[in-house]
Image 1 (cartoon, one colour):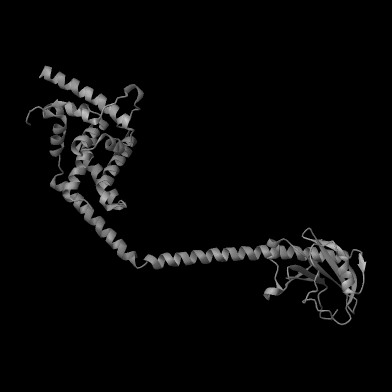
Image 2 (cartoon, rainbow over the protein chains, first blue to last red; image 1 turned 135 degrees about the vertical axis):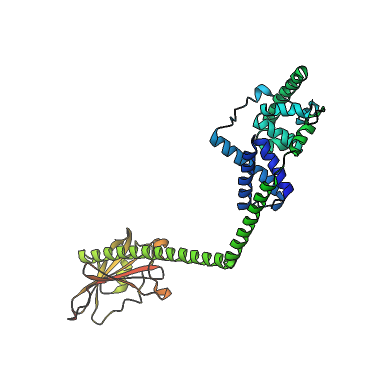
Length: 158
Length: 216
């Protein structure tokens, strides 16, 4: 069902959700088991199906552990009218990204992964996250603002 | 780590490209996948022979169950109705209420029942024995519906009563039909032998004392 390349891609998605290697691997392993036990009706959609399984399992696990706070987001207060492509103008080096990465929320990391690695559009990200497009744009807007601020600071301090 | 300014997108891509499963993790996942394939294959092989025959057998068993359930329900409902009629008929027989029309002539008696909304018939199942004498008739009711009661005396002085009535279609269908070669339903109620049947859409009932060993 999954070749090595696919397993690695799925593992990267797990790593966007989990900070720890072990947690990411456990998440991948349990998700693969689930996919093998209940395969999708359309075998051609195995990868997208596996992505959804991973996300659902992650939410279940972390909701149970209450490790991650899925805080409500005030969409009206953060209404924006731009696209995920607005992240394109953020410029930073790998070191800066590594410094910033731990401060990103799970959903911000997930959005970055889906956008940069998977090449998702705003709508596709919203669909994978199960959130309204406006909510996703609001999160992107906040993240972009913070990234720019952090990059600016690191340049000053660097 | 190369420290070179680039787009956020490129930095994120590079960050994740560096993430890979190690050989041990890959081996475990591949073993997991292989084991699942074997299990699935074995499961399919084990139950493959069941397939459609099993589904068909299940459908047949279900159909038979439904048919029998419905059949027993219908039979039970019919029996309840027939018993109720038998009790009613026996009670009417025992009350021996005064006759409203007295005549030995069947046609005269039948002519009296002009309030009924069905045609009184002469049943093929009521064999008149030698010496039987029609005494007359009166209105009564069966299942709350107007009916005709005819009273007959046999040569030995025993009284029997015959009834003709009609019932709503749904109840009528539960009465044995001589037109369909059914046999009359027979009950012993209140010391009487009661027979019930229908002919041409009319319900007939007969109540009389059962024959005893002494022939009385």
